[in-house]
Image (cartoon, rainbow, N blue to C red):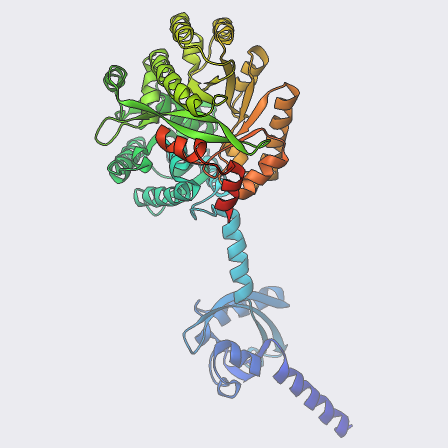
Length: 570
Protein backbone atom coordinates (compact mmCIF):
# COMPACT_ATOMS: atom_id res chain seq x y z
CA UNK A 1 0.00 0.00 0.00
CA UNK A 2 2.86 2.35 0.84
CA UNK A 3 4.48 1.57 -2.52
CA UNK A 4 1.21 2.21 -4.34
CA UNK A 5 0.71 5.48 -2.52
CA UNK A 6 4.29 6.54 -3.24
CA UNK A 7 3.91 5.69 -6.93
CA UNK A 8 0.59 7.60 -7.12
CA UNK A 9 2.17 10.58 -5.41
CA UNK A 10 5.11 10.58 -7.83
CA UNK A 11 2.77 10.33 -10.83
CA UNK A 12 0.61 13.17 -9.55
CA UNK A 13 3.73 15.25 -8.97
CA UNK A 14 4.93 14.58 -12.53
CA UNK A 15 1.53 15.45 -13.94
CA UNK A 16 1.51 18.70 -11.94
CA UNK A 17 5.03 19.72 -12.85
CA UNK A 18 4.85 18.77 -16.53
CA UNK A 19 1.31 19.84 -17.33
CA UNK A 20 1.25 21.90 -20.56
CA UNK A 21 -0.98 24.46 -18.85
CA UNK A 22 -0.03 26.63 -15.93
CA UNK A 23 -1.16 25.01 -12.63
CA UNK A 24 -0.87 26.30 -9.07
CA UNK A 25 -2.39 25.84 -5.64
CA UNK A 26 -3.31 28.93 -3.64
CA UNK A 27 -4.15 29.49 -0.01
CA UNK A 28 -7.23 31.32 1.21
CA UNK A 29 -5.72 34.77 0.56
CA UNK A 30 -4.46 33.95 -2.92
CA UNK A 31 -0.82 33.30 -2.05
CA UNK A 32 0.81 30.69 -4.28
CA UNK A 33 1.64 27.52 -2.39
CA UNK A 34 2.96 25.51 -5.34
CA UNK A 35 3.31 26.19 -9.07
CA UNK A 36 4.46 24.22 -12.08
CA UNK A 37 6.97 25.02 -14.80
CA UNK A 38 4.32 26.14 -17.34
CA UNK A 39 2.98 28.82 -14.99
CA UNK A 40 6.51 30.07 -14.36
CA UNK A 41 7.09 30.37 -18.12
CA UNK A 42 3.76 32.17 -18.52
CA UNK A 43 4.56 34.88 -15.95
CA UNK A 44 8.30 34.99 -16.71
CA UNK A 45 9.40 33.79 -13.24
CA UNK A 46 11.00 30.42 -12.38
CA UNK A 47 8.45 28.09 -10.80
CA UNK A 48 10.52 27.62 -7.62
CA UNK A 49 10.37 31.39 -6.96
CA UNK A 50 6.59 31.65 -7.21
CA UNK A 51 5.55 30.18 -3.82
CA UNK A 52 4.87 33.05 -1.45
CA UNK A 53 3.87 35.44 -4.24
CA UNK A 54 0.24 36.53 -4.64
CA UNK A 55 -1.42 35.63 -7.95
CA UNK A 56 -2.97 39.12 -7.86
CA UNK A 57 0.56 40.54 -8.26
CA UNK A 58 0.61 39.41 -11.90
CA UNK A 59 -2.90 40.59 -12.82
CA UNK A 60 -3.40 44.01 -14.41
CA UNK A 61 -7.00 44.07 -13.17
CA UNK A 62 -7.31 44.39 -9.36
CA UNK A 63 -9.00 42.16 -6.72
CA UNK A 64 -8.76 38.93 -8.68
CA UNK A 65 -9.02 36.53 -5.72
CA UNK A 66 -11.91 38.43 -4.12
CA UNK A 67 -13.87 38.00 -7.36
CA UNK A 68 -12.96 34.30 -7.49
CA UNK A 69 -14.17 33.58 -3.96
CA UNK A 70 -17.38 35.48 -4.63
CA UNK A 71 -18.02 33.35 -7.70
CA UNK A 72 -17.28 30.10 -5.87
CA UNK A 73 -19.61 30.99 -3.03
CA UNK A 74 -22.35 31.61 -5.56
CA UNK A 75 -21.92 28.51 -7.71
CA UNK A 76 -19.90 26.08 -5.64
CA UNK A 77 -18.32 24.68 -8.82
CA UNK A 78 -15.75 26.18 -11.18
CA UNK A 79 -15.09 29.86 -11.87
CA UNK A 80 -13.71 30.93 -15.28
CA UNK A 81 -12.13 34.38 -15.54
CA UNK A 82 -10.13 36.06 -18.31
CA UNK A 83 -7.39 38.38 -17.12
CA UNK A 84 -4.41 40.29 -18.48
CA UNK A 85 -1.13 39.28 -16.81
CA UNK A 86 2.09 41.28 -16.80
CA UNK A 87 5.23 39.16 -16.96
CA UNK A 88 8.45 39.88 -15.11
CA UNK A 89 9.82 41.27 -18.38
CA UNK A 90 6.93 43.73 -18.73
CA UNK A 91 5.06 41.89 -21.50
CA UNK A 92 1.31 41.54 -21.32
CA UNK A 93 -0.38 38.20 -21.85
CA UNK A 94 -4.08 37.36 -22.14
CA UNK A 95 -4.77 34.48 -19.75
CA UNK A 96 -7.83 32.27 -19.31
CA UNK A 97 -8.07 31.17 -15.64
CA UNK A 98 -10.14 28.37 -14.09
CA UNK A 99 -10.55 28.06 -10.29
CA UNK A 100 -12.05 25.42 -8.08
CA UNK A 101 -11.91 24.67 -4.35
CA UNK A 102 -9.22 22.10 -3.62
CA UNK A 103 -10.04 21.42 0.01
CA UNK A 104 -13.12 22.03 2.15
CA UNK A 105 -13.64 22.89 5.78
CA UNK A 106 -13.67 26.20 7.55
CA UNK A 107 -12.61 29.31 5.65
CA UNK A 108 -9.16 29.33 7.20
CA UNK A 109 -8.25 25.96 5.66
CA UNK A 110 -9.77 26.29 2.21
CA UNK A 111 -7.38 26.37 -0.76
CA UNK A 112 -7.72 26.79 -4.51
CA UNK A 113 -6.53 24.96 -7.58
CA UNK A 114 -5.99 27.25 -10.59
CA UNK A 115 -5.34 26.41 -14.23
CA UNK A 116 -3.90 29.17 -16.45
CA UNK A 117 -3.88 29.07 -20.26
CA UNK A 118 -2.08 31.65 -22.40
CA UNK A 119 -4.66 32.78 -25.00
CA UNK A 120 -2.73 35.84 -26.23
CA UNK A 121 -2.27 34.55 -29.77
CA UNK A 122 -5.83 33.28 -29.97
CA UNK A 123 -7.12 36.65 -28.76
CA UNK A 124 -4.90 38.43 -31.27
CA UNK A 125 -6.32 36.34 -34.10
CA UNK A 126 -9.87 36.92 -32.87
CA UNK A 127 -9.23 40.66 -32.70
CA UNK A 128 -7.75 40.55 -36.21
CA UNK A 129 -10.76 38.68 -37.59
CA UNK A 130 -13.10 41.14 -35.85
CA UNK A 131 -11.17 44.07 -37.24
CA UNK A 132 -11.19 42.62 -40.74
CA UNK A 133 -14.93 42.07 -40.46
CA UNK A 134 -15.55 45.64 -39.32
CA UNK A 135 -12.93 47.70 -41.16
CA UNK A 136 -12.20 48.65 -44.75
CA UNK A 137 -9.10 46.83 -46.00
CA UNK A 138 -7.75 49.82 -47.97
CA UNK A 139 -8.22 52.77 -45.60
CA UNK A 140 -8.53 51.00 -42.23
CA UNK A 141 -11.73 52.95 -41.58
CA UNK A 142 -14.98 51.38 -40.41
CA UNK A 143 -16.75 49.43 -43.16
CA UNK A 144 -20.43 49.22 -44.04
CA UNK A 145 -21.10 46.48 -41.46
CA UNK A 146 -19.63 48.48 -38.59
CA UNK A 147 -21.33 51.70 -39.70
CA UNK A 148 -24.74 50.07 -39.99
CA UNK A 149 -24.34 48.49 -36.54
CA UNK A 150 -23.44 51.86 -35.00
CA UNK A 151 -26.35 53.63 -36.71
CA UNK A 152 -28.72 50.89 -35.57
CA UNK A 153 -27.49 51.38 -31.99
CA UNK A 154 -27.99 55.15 -32.16
CA UNK A 155 -31.45 54.82 -33.70
CA UNK A 156 -32.47 52.39 -30.94
CA UNK A 157 -31.15 54.78 -28.30
CA UNK A 158 -33.02 57.66 -29.95
CA UNK A 159 -36.29 55.81 -29.52
CA UNK A 160 -35.65 55.99 -25.78
CA UNK A 161 -35.08 59.75 -25.70
CA UNK A 162 -31.35 60.01 -26.44
CA UNK A 163 -29.87 63.14 -28.04
CA UNK A 164 -29.79 64.20 -31.70
CA UNK A 165 -26.77 62.84 -33.54
CA UNK A 166 -26.13 63.03 -37.29
CA UNK A 167 -25.12 60.81 -40.19
CA UNK A 168 -22.92 62.35 -42.88
CA UNK A 169 -22.37 61.03 -46.43
CA UNK A 170 -19.37 62.33 -48.39
CA UNK A 171 -18.71 61.65 -52.08
CA UNK A 172 -15.49 62.60 -53.84
CA UNK A 173 -16.17 64.73 -56.90
CA UNK A 174 -14.01 64.05 -59.98
CA UNK A 175 -12.45 60.92 -58.50
CA UNK A 176 -13.02 58.99 -61.75
CA UNK A 177 -10.83 61.47 -63.60
CA UNK A 178 -7.99 60.76 -61.15
CA UNK A 179 -8.26 57.02 -61.82
CA UNK A 180 -8.44 57.52 -65.57
CA UNK A 181 -5.57 60.00 -65.76
CA UNK A 182 -3.17 58.77 -63.06
CA UNK A 183 -4.10 55.15 -62.48
CA UNK A 184 -5.89 53.26 -59.75
CA UNK A 185 -2.81 53.02 -57.53
CA UNK A 186 -2.86 56.83 -57.25
CA UNK A 187 -6.62 56.66 -56.69
CA UNK A 188 -6.09 54.22 -53.82
CA UNK A 189 -3.48 56.50 -52.25
CA UNK A 190 -5.89 59.42 -52.56
CA UNK A 191 -8.67 57.45 -50.80
CA UNK A 192 -6.32 56.67 -47.91
CA UNK A 193 -5.28 60.33 -47.69
CA UNK A 194 -8.90 61.48 -47.81
CA UNK A 195 -9.81 59.04 -45.02
CA UNK A 196 -7.09 60.55 -42.82
CA UNK A 197 -8.33 64.05 -43.64
CA UNK A 198 -11.84 63.15 -42.49
CA UNK A 199 -10.54 61.62 -39.27
CA UNK A 200 -8.65 64.83 -38.52
CA UNK A 201 -11.86 66.90 -38.73
CA UNK A 202 -13.92 64.99 -36.13
CA UNK A 203 -13.77 64.03 -32.47
CA UNK A 204 -12.48 60.75 -31.06
CA UNK A 205 -16.04 59.66 -30.24
CA UNK A 206 -17.16 60.08 -33.88
CA UNK A 207 -16.90 57.19 -36.33
CA UNK A 208 -15.41 57.62 -39.82
CA UNK A 209 -16.01 54.89 -42.40
CA UNK A 210 -15.95 54.03 -46.08
CA UNK A 211 -18.95 52.47 -47.80
CA UNK A 212 -16.97 51.61 -50.91
CA UNK A 213 -15.61 53.32 -54.00
CA UNK A 214 -15.31 57.04 -53.26
CA UNK A 215 -18.20 57.20 -50.76
CA UNK A 216 -17.41 57.89 -47.11
CA UNK A 217 -19.59 58.15 -44.00
CA UNK A 218 -19.18 59.90 -40.67
CA UNK A 219 -21.37 59.04 -37.69
CA UNK A 220 -21.67 61.90 -35.19
CA UNK A 221 -23.43 60.21 -32.24
CA UNK A 222 -24.06 63.32 -30.12
CA UNK A 223 -23.83 66.21 -32.59
CA UNK A 224 -26.39 68.99 -32.64
CA UNK A 225 -27.66 70.40 -35.93
CA UNK A 226 -25.27 73.33 -35.71
CA UNK A 227 -22.32 71.08 -34.91
CA UNK A 228 -23.10 68.79 -37.86
CA UNK A 229 -23.30 71.74 -40.22
CA UNK A 230 -20.01 73.04 -38.80
CA UNK A 231 -18.30 69.70 -39.42
CA UNK A 232 -19.57 69.60 -43.01
CA UNK A 233 -18.29 73.11 -43.71
CA UNK A 234 -14.95 72.31 -42.08
CA UNK A 235 -14.53 69.19 -44.24
CA UNK A 236 -15.37 71.07 -47.45
CA UNK A 237 -12.84 73.78 -46.59
CA UNK A 238 -10.19 71.21 -45.63
CA UNK A 239 -10.65 69.39 -48.95
CA UNK A 240 -10.31 72.65 -50.90
CA UNK A 241 -7.19 73.55 -48.93
CA UNK A 242 -5.60 70.10 -49.19
CA UNK A 243 -6.19 69.44 -52.90
CA UNK A 244 -6.96 72.81 -54.46
CA UNK A 245 -3.39 73.85 -55.16
CA UNK A 246 -2.20 70.64 -56.81
CA UNK A 247 -1.22 70.75 -60.46
CA UNK A 248 -2.30 67.23 -61.50
CA UNK A 249 -5.77 65.66 -61.64
CA UNK A 250 -5.93 65.37 -57.84
CA UNK A 251 -6.17 69.19 -57.77
CA UNK A 252 -9.75 68.81 -59.06
CA UNK A 253 -10.88 66.70 -56.11
CA UNK A 254 -13.72 68.22 -54.12
CA UNK A 255 -16.36 66.79 -51.79
CA UNK A 256 -20.15 66.78 -51.96
CA UNK A 257 -21.61 66.31 -48.48
CA UNK A 258 -25.06 65.42 -47.22
CA UNK A 259 -25.94 65.06 -43.55
CA UNK A 260 -29.15 63.91 -41.90
CA UNK A 261 -30.06 64.37 -38.27
CA UNK A 262 -31.25 61.11 -36.73
CA UNK A 263 -34.27 62.90 -35.30
CA UNK A 264 -35.26 64.19 -38.77
CA UNK A 265 -34.92 60.73 -40.28
CA UNK A 266 -37.09 59.28 -37.51
CA UNK A 267 -39.72 62.01 -37.84
CA UNK A 268 -39.88 61.50 -41.62
CA UNK A 269 -39.89 57.70 -41.33
CA UNK A 270 -36.76 57.41 -43.52
CA UNK A 271 -33.64 55.33 -43.00
CA UNK A 272 -30.82 57.75 -42.00
CA UNK A 273 -28.53 56.34 -44.71
CA UNK A 274 -31.14 56.93 -47.41
CA UNK A 275 -31.85 60.47 -46.24
CA UNK A 276 -28.16 61.41 -46.03
CA UNK A 277 -27.50 59.81 -49.44
CA UNK A 278 -30.38 61.75 -50.99
CA UNK A 279 -29.07 65.00 -49.52
CA UNK A 280 -25.55 64.24 -50.72
CA UNK A 281 -26.81 63.87 -54.29
CA UNK A 282 -28.81 67.09 -53.87
CA UNK A 283 -25.51 68.77 -53.01
CA UNK A 284 -23.81 67.18 -56.01
CA UNK A 285 -26.57 68.21 -58.39
CA UNK A 286 -26.38 71.76 -57.00
CA UNK A 287 -22.92 72.09 -58.52
CA UNK A 288 -20.64 69.78 -56.49
CA UNK A 289 -18.32 70.89 -53.70
CA UNK A 290 -21.41 71.71 -51.62
CA UNK A 291 -23.12 70.51 -48.48
CA UNK A 292 -26.77 69.74 -47.89
CA UNK A 293 -28.38 68.93 -44.56
CA UNK A 294 -31.81 67.85 -43.35
CA UNK A 295 -34.11 70.21 -41.52
CA UNK A 296 -37.41 69.71 -39.79
CA UNK A 297 -38.94 72.45 -41.93
CA UNK A 298 -38.53 71.42 -45.55
CA UNK A 299 -36.18 68.46 -45.33
CA UNK A 300 -33.27 70.27 -46.95
CA UNK A 301 -30.94 73.21 -46.31
CA UNK A 302 -27.98 73.97 -48.54
CA UNK A 303 -24.75 75.53 -47.38
CA UNK A 304 -21.42 76.29 -48.98
CA UNK A 305 -20.51 77.75 -52.33
CA UNK A 306 -19.80 75.97 -55.59
CA UNK A 307 -16.27 75.90 -56.91
CA UNK A 308 -17.53 76.78 -60.41
CA UNK A 309 -20.19 79.38 -61.17
CA UNK A 310 -22.58 79.80 -64.10
CA UNK A 311 -20.49 82.81 -65.11
CA UNK A 312 -17.44 80.51 -65.26
CA UNK A 313 -19.32 78.13 -67.55
CA UNK A 314 -20.46 80.91 -69.88
CA UNK A 315 -16.94 82.36 -69.99
CA UNK A 316 -15.46 78.99 -71.00
CA UNK A 317 -18.14 78.43 -73.64
CA UNK A 318 -17.29 81.80 -75.16
CA UNK A 319 -13.55 81.11 -75.19
CA UNK A 320 -11.20 78.45 -76.51
CA UNK A 321 -10.35 77.18 -73.03
CA UNK A 322 -11.28 73.56 -73.76
CA UNK A 323 -9.63 70.59 -75.43
CA UNK A 324 -10.42 66.95 -76.10
CA UNK A 325 -8.15 64.29 -74.58
CA UNK A 326 -8.38 60.73 -75.86
CA UNK A 327 -8.53 57.47 -73.94
CA UNK A 328 -7.98 54.30 -76.00
CA UNK A 329 -10.31 51.31 -76.15
CA UNK A 330 -8.80 47.92 -76.95
CA UNK A 331 -10.71 45.71 -79.38
CA UNK A 332 -10.48 42.33 -77.66
CA UNK A 333 -11.28 40.55 -80.94
CA UNK A 334 -8.36 41.99 -82.90
CA UNK A 335 -6.01 43.29 -80.22
CA UNK A 336 -5.90 46.73 -81.83
CA UNK A 337 -6.92 50.27 -80.90
CA UNK A 338 -9.53 51.43 -83.38
CA UNK A 339 -11.77 53.39 -81.00
CA UNK A 340 -11.21 56.12 -78.39
CA UNK A 341 -13.34 58.17 -76.03
CA UNK A 342 -12.99 61.93 -76.25
CA UNK A 343 -12.89 63.47 -72.76
CA UNK A 344 -13.42 67.17 -72.13
CA UNK A 345 -10.58 69.03 -70.45
CA UNK A 346 -10.58 72.68 -69.37
CA UNK A 347 -7.43 74.70 -69.89
CA UNK A 348 -8.27 77.88 -67.97
CA UNK A 349 -8.29 78.98 -64.37
CA UNK A 350 -5.72 79.07 -61.57
CA UNK A 351 -5.99 76.36 -60.45
CA UNK A 352 -7.77 74.88 -63.47
CA UNK A 353 -11.52 74.53 -63.22
CA UNK A 354 -12.76 71.09 -62.34
CA UNK A 355 -14.37 69.43 -65.36
CA UNK A 356 -16.83 67.60 -63.14
CA UNK A 357 -17.92 70.78 -61.35
CA UNK A 358 -18.05 72.59 -64.69
CA UNK A 359 -20.40 70.03 -66.25
CA UNK A 360 -22.50 69.89 -63.07
CA UNK A 361 -23.05 73.64 -63.07
CA UNK A 362 -23.76 73.56 -66.82
CA UNK A 363 -26.48 70.97 -66.20
CA UNK A 364 -28.00 73.00 -63.37
CA UNK A 365 -28.05 76.09 -65.61
CA UNK A 366 -29.46 74.18 -68.61
CA UNK A 367 -26.31 74.91 -70.63
CA UNK A 368 -25.39 71.32 -71.53
CA UNK A 369 -26.79 71.61 -75.10
CA UNK A 370 -24.47 74.59 -75.72
CA UNK A 371 -21.58 72.67 -74.20
CA UNK A 372 -22.33 69.51 -76.20
CA UNK A 373 -22.37 71.45 -79.48
CA UNK A 374 -18.93 72.92 -78.66
CA UNK A 375 -17.61 69.46 -77.78
CA UNK A 376 -19.06 68.06 -81.03
CA UNK A 377 -17.27 70.69 -83.11
CA UNK A 378 -13.96 69.96 -81.39
CA UNK A 379 -14.61 66.23 -81.63
CA UNK A 380 -15.16 66.34 -85.37
CA UNK A 381 -11.80 68.10 -85.78
CA UNK A 382 -10.20 65.36 -83.68
CA UNK A 383 -11.94 62.60 -85.64
CA UNK A 384 -10.79 64.06 -88.95
CA UNK A 385 -7.18 64.06 -87.78
CA UNK A 386 -7.43 60.54 -86.37
CA UNK A 387 -8.83 59.25 -89.66
CA UNK A 388 -5.92 60.85 -91.52
CA UNK A 389 -3.81 58.21 -89.77
CA UNK A 390 -6.35 55.41 -89.82
CA UNK A 391 -9.44 55.84 -92.02
CA UNK A 392 -11.55 53.33 -90.09
CA UNK A 393 -10.90 54.92 -86.68
CA UNK A 394 -13.94 55.81 -84.53
CA UNK A 395 -14.48 58.37 -81.78
CA UNK A 396 -16.95 58.38 -78.88
CA UNK A 397 -18.16 61.69 -77.43
CA UNK A 398 -20.35 62.22 -74.39
CA UNK A 399 -23.72 63.87 -74.91
CA UNK A 400 -26.03 64.94 -72.12
CA UNK A 401 -29.61 63.71 -71.87
CA UNK A 402 -30.52 67.43 -71.91
CA UNK A 403 -29.32 67.63 -75.51
CA UNK A 404 -31.35 64.58 -76.54
CA UNK A 405 -34.47 66.36 -75.33
CA UNK A 406 -33.67 69.70 -76.96
CA UNK A 407 -35.00 70.55 -80.44
CA UNK A 408 -32.47 73.39 -80.66
CA UNK A 409 -29.58 71.04 -79.88
CA UNK A 410 -30.90 68.57 -82.47
CA UNK A 411 -30.86 71.25 -85.16
CA UNK A 412 -27.34 72.44 -84.25
CA UNK A 413 -26.01 68.88 -84.16
CA UNK A 414 -27.59 68.16 -87.55
CA UNK A 415 -26.07 71.30 -89.04
CA UNK A 416 -22.58 70.34 -87.85
CA UNK A 417 -22.85 66.76 -89.14
CA UNK A 418 -24.24 67.84 -92.53
CA UNK A 419 -21.29 70.21 -93.02
CA UNK A 420 -18.73 67.66 -91.81
CA UNK A 421 -19.59 64.28 -93.35
CA UNK A 422 -17.78 61.20 -92.07
CA UNK A 423 -18.00 57.43 -92.67
CA UNK A 424 -21.07 55.70 -91.21
CA UNK A 425 -20.53 54.70 -87.59
CA UNK A 426 -17.32 56.70 -87.11
CA UNK A 427 -18.95 58.98 -84.54
CA UNK A 428 -20.44 57.45 -81.41
CA UNK A 429 -22.60 59.64 -79.17
CA UNK A 430 -22.38 58.32 -75.63
CA UNK A 431 -25.51 59.16 -73.61
CA UNK A 432 -24.66 60.06 -70.01
CA UNK A 433 -27.09 59.91 -67.11
CA UNK A 434 -25.83 62.83 -65.08
CA UNK A 435 -28.99 64.73 -66.03
CA UNK A 436 -32.35 62.93 -66.30
CA UNK A 437 -34.08 62.36 -69.62
CA UNK A 438 -37.66 63.36 -68.93
CA UNK A 439 -39.38 62.79 -72.30
CA UNK A 440 -38.41 59.97 -74.65
CA UNK A 441 -40.16 61.13 -77.84
CA UNK A 442 -37.75 64.07 -78.47
CA UNK A 443 -34.84 61.70 -77.73
CA UNK A 444 -36.10 59.23 -80.35
CA UNK A 445 -36.32 62.09 -82.87
CA UNK A 446 -32.77 63.17 -81.98
CA UNK A 447 -31.49 59.63 -82.48
CA UNK A 448 -33.25 59.25 -85.82
CA UNK A 449 -31.83 62.49 -87.23
CA UNK A 450 -28.29 61.69 -86.03
CA UNK A 451 -28.51 58.11 -87.35
CA UNK A 452 -29.54 59.38 -90.77
CA UNK A 453 -26.36 61.50 -90.72
CA UNK A 454 -24.12 58.51 -89.84
CA UNK A 455 -23.81 58.68 -86.05
CA UNK A 456 -24.48 55.76 -83.70
CA UNK A 457 -25.23 55.71 -79.98
CA UNK A 458 -23.80 54.18 -76.81
CA UNK A 459 -25.41 53.94 -73.37
CA UNK A 460 -23.03 54.85 -70.54
CA UNK A 461 -22.65 53.32 -67.05
CA UNK A 462 -25.11 50.52 -67.70
CA UNK A 463 -25.97 48.63 -64.51
CA UNK A 464 -26.25 51.61 -62.15
CA UNK A 465 -29.67 53.08 -61.46
CA UNK A 466 -32.94 52.34 -63.22
CA UNK A 467 -32.82 54.93 -66.03
CA UNK A 468 -30.38 53.00 -68.30
CA UNK A 469 -32.79 50.04 -68.38
CA UNK A 470 -35.59 52.44 -69.32
CA UNK A 471 -33.44 53.97 -72.04
CA UNK A 472 -32.42 50.57 -73.38
CA UNK A 473 -36.01 49.44 -73.79
CA UNK A 474 -37.18 52.65 -75.52
CA UNK A 475 -34.18 53.97 -77.48
CA UNK A 476 -31.77 52.57 -80.05
CA UNK A 477 -28.16 51.84 -79.02
CA UNK A 478 -25.33 50.12 -80.85
CA UNK A 479 -22.86 50.12 -77.91
CA UNK A 480 -23.39 49.25 -74.27
CA UNK A 481 -20.87 50.49 -71.70
CA UNK A 482 -20.75 48.40 -68.52
CA UNK A 483 -20.45 50.44 -65.30
CA UNK A 484 -16.83 50.51 -64.16
CA UNK A 485 -17.58 49.85 -60.50
CA UNK A 486 -18.69 46.31 -61.37
CA UNK A 487 -15.76 45.72 -63.72
CA UNK A 488 -13.31 46.78 -61.01
CA UNK A 489 -15.00 44.51 -58.49
CA UNK A 490 -14.81 41.36 -60.64
CA UNK A 491 -11.58 40.16 -59.04
CA UNK A 492 -12.76 40.22 -55.42
CA UNK A 493 -16.54 39.94 -55.78
CA UNK A 494 -18.28 37.07 -57.52
CA UNK A 495 -21.50 39.10 -57.41
CA UNK A 496 -19.87 41.88 -59.47
CA UNK A 497 -18.50 39.25 -61.86
CA UNK A 498 -22.00 37.81 -62.34
CA UNK A 499 -23.39 41.30 -63.01
CA UNK A 500 -20.73 41.94 -65.68
CA UNK A 501 -21.38 38.57 -67.33
CA UNK A 502 -25.14 39.18 -67.28
CA UNK A 503 -24.86 42.68 -68.79
CA UNK A 504 -22.44 41.39 -71.42
CA UNK A 505 -24.86 38.63 -72.36
CA UNK A 506 -27.71 41.16 -72.48
CA UNK A 507 -25.72 43.33 -74.86
CA UNK A 508 -24.91 40.43 -77.17
CA UNK A 509 -28.54 39.30 -77.16
CA UNK A 510 -29.53 42.83 -78.22
CA UNK A 511 -26.94 42.86 -81.01
CA UNK A 512 -24.80 45.53 -79.31
CA UNK A 513 -21.04 45.82 -78.91
CA UNK A 514 -20.02 45.95 -75.24
CA UNK A 515 -17.38 48.09 -73.54
CA UNK A 516 -15.90 47.44 -70.08
CA UNK A 517 -14.71 50.57 -68.27
CA UNK A 518 -12.11 50.80 -65.46
CA UNK A 519 -9.94 47.94 -66.70
CA UNK A 520 -7.03 48.74 -64.40
CA UNK A 521 -5.03 45.49 -64.28
CA UNK A 522 -4.09 42.44 -66.30
CA UNK A 523 -6.28 40.27 -64.07
CA UNK A 524 -9.35 42.42 -64.76
CA UNK A 525 -8.54 42.43 -68.49
CA UNK A 526 -8.45 38.62 -68.50
CA UNK A 527 -11.81 38.39 -66.71
CA UNK A 528 -13.31 40.89 -69.17
CA UNK A 529 -11.99 38.88 -72.09
CA UNK A 530 -13.49 35.68 -70.63
CA UNK A 531 -16.91 37.39 -70.49
CA UNK A 532 -16.92 37.91 -74.25
CA UNK A 533 -16.88 41.71 -73.97
CA UNK A 534 -15.93 43.54 -77.18
CA UNK A 535 -13.83 46.47 -75.90
CA UNK A 536 -11.76 47.20 -72.80
CA UNK A 537 -11.12 50.73 -71.54
CA UNK A 538 -9.15 51.85 -68.52
CA UNK A 539 -5.74 52.78 -67.20
CA UNK A 540 -4.28 49.33 -67.95
CA UNK A 541 -5.09 49.90 -71.64
CA UNK A 542 -4.04 53.55 -71.62
CA UNK A 543 -4.67 56.85 -69.85
CA UNK A 544 -6.46 59.80 -71.43
CA UNK A 545 -3.86 61.95 -73.18
CA UNK A 546 -3.84 64.91 -75.58
CA UNK A 547 -4.37 64.10 -79.26
CA UNK A 548 -0.72 64.32 -80.39
CA UNK A 549 0.41 61.93 -77.65
CA UNK A 550 -2.44 59.57 -78.50
CA UNK A 551 -1.53 59.48 -82.20
CA UNK A 552 2.17 58.87 -81.56
CA UNK A 553 1.43 56.16 -78.99
CA UNK A 554 -1.45 54.27 -80.55
CA UNK A 555 -1.67 55.08 -84.25
CA UNK A 556 1.92 55.51 -85.46
CA UNK A 557 3.29 52.48 -83.57
CA UNK A 558 4.05 49.31 -85.51
CA UNK A 559 3.53 47.12 -82.42
CA UNK A 560 0.02 45.60 -82.05
CA UNK A 561 -1.72 46.96 -79.00
CA UNK A 562 -2.20 43.49 -77.52
CA UNK A 563 1.61 43.10 -77.50
CA UNK A 564 2.02 46.51 -75.83
CA UNK A 565 -0.37 45.52 -73.07
CA UNK A 566 1.53 42.27 -72.61
CA UNK A 567 4.82 44.15 -72.31
CA UNK A 568 3.27 46.47 -69.73
CA UNK A 569 2.13 43.43 -67.70
CA UNK A 570 5.68 42.08 -67.65
